[in-house]
Amino acid sequence: MRAISGLWRWRHNPLCRRTDLAEAWLALASLLLVLVAAPVIGCLTGGAAQSALQRSVRAQHQTRHLVPATVVRALDPSPLEADPEVVSGRDASGRVLAHWTAPDGTGRNGPVAARLKDPRPGDRFRIWTDGHGRPVARPLDTATATTHAVLAGFGAALAAAALVEGGRRLMVRRMVRRRYARWDQAWDKAGPDWGRTGTGS
Image (cartoon, rainbow, N blue to C red; front, side):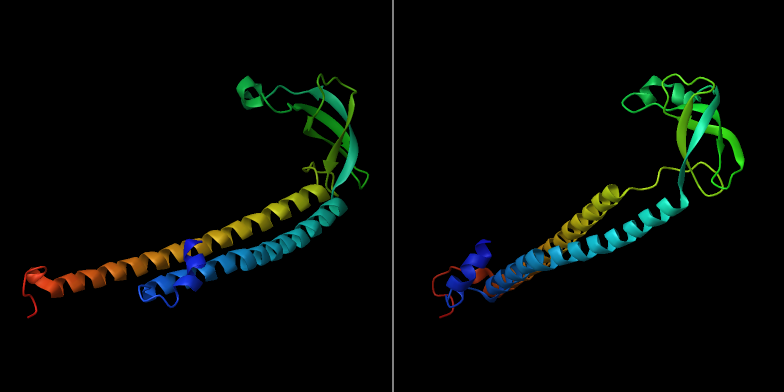
């Protein structure tokens, strides 16, 4: 920001080097890109993600069905599910052997996760299945899809801003190296006579 604020004040100053102006213009261009291009990239990315996710939401809700199921018997938990350190802090779903009717009318039996504290034979609950009655995960809802799209757009904007800033820093570093190289050349030309009385006479 100091380089940008001094751009107008220093442009005709005899002490202002060309590299100072180049660095100031580079900073100004980078700031404009961060303020304009990064939000545009974020909006475009978020919009594309929103469209794709909403299509996925509609497709999942068309192909997945919530059907009633009946507990046949409880199943022994796996070693991973039995570990209290693993299940602590999240909802523990007991696995049961259940019977349900698929959307095509066929009866199904199989192990599923049931959110029942104490599942007993005959208890009823609901599960998500596909059109053939196979258990599937719960379909994505609209609010969650929108949240994911917003996060994708925000992440894309941050990535674009970071890329611009990284490019600016890289170019400034190259400018500084060239400046130091020119200083070294000037000192080499001055040689060991620098500062001696009568040098150059």
